[in-house]
Length: 201
Length: 201
Image (cartoon, rainbow over all chains, first blue to last red; front, side):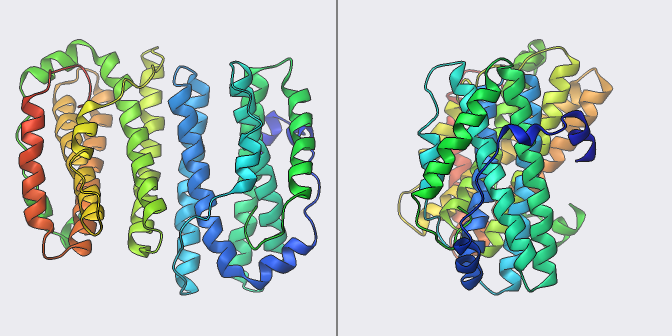
């Protein structure tokens, strides 16, 4: 992470997300099993999203390698969350879907090159929001092993956010920053209209 | 791999696949870039298939962990194939689809518990066939680095085939072996009716 950040200082400043509603942490801590069950699917879907970008843009060698590596990370996270759940004697449950991600995906413009830029930035937003919430959990969990796991996952999500931002910058050097700010604003609106639930988003 | 194989000796015997048409290797070696381009997508789709099983069967803890680990392997393979292509100065191309995998997927029975068994066995067949062909390539490639890579990938695919067979056995102890033999026969028919092309399948 250090070497990556050194290359792209303050990349995350391009994507200022509003702070999570303080009620979220209380609700999440009250039903941690539900949060973990949702989190497992979040990590799975993050891997799938990265792979879907490889399918769409196989001719972009940098993107292919970055996304394969990111999916490699996320699949390890699936194993880690599954192991945490197994320690807690809780089976994973079916994915309830994610209306937060769906609302963000609806903002992706359909025509290239806007489409690539928006897909990268929407994934950056999701990683950024996940990082914030995983860090909130890491700071509040009672179990030291869970706390350590969540802190490491939060760090990974920050790195992933910056990978997406870096790819967005390379794909659309002239427009990525303005669109990132715009999507951060739109995400604030989506967050405001959501019911606070015991899930990652 | 050794410890896994030690637990399940001769698991692969349950899935005897016919030998590949000898013309395939000649055709593949004559257009290696096309084979690599197809191979990249095969590894990507293998990761996606494993993740799709997690989505469908999140309550099966053993399957979730095994599939997340398998997808973790496959995403590393995507990086390795992308690096090989980059050394050869070839960009990946769009996925041409895979009528071989589609023909196999059409054999998956729609109702549970048949559906889970068939999905696991179809993925075992695809891994087994990939392993055979990657090993053929490994034995014939001129470049030592490519040969080494393909040999290691072939070994990984054998291990993956056995993971699917082992999950199939656990899911349907009484019927998995007969169904595996049946699908191996059906795959032989699919192979016989296919044009031999410079792709993995």
